[in-house]
Length: 77
Image 1 (tube, helix red, strand yellow):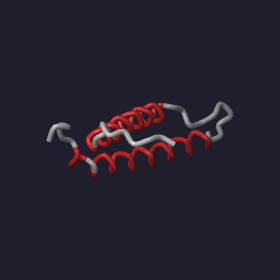
Image 2: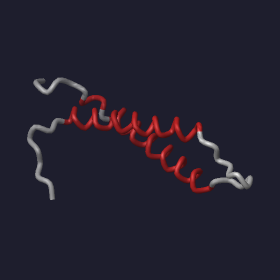
Image 3: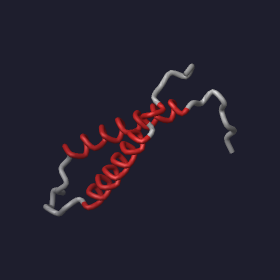
């Protein structure tokens, strides 16, 4: 079990959530460019599920980042 790092600030959480949101949005853009139809003409349902999970994660993390934006301040304040 990790111990609490006293140097960790709430603003760190905000920036980590922002970074995670940017990463999931990048994955979303890549997934939008992919072909969801296999060579045999069938739908790639695994890819559809991955895209849906990523969309949910990205939207949720984006909302969490918005909720924690009030902690976006210098550590000395």
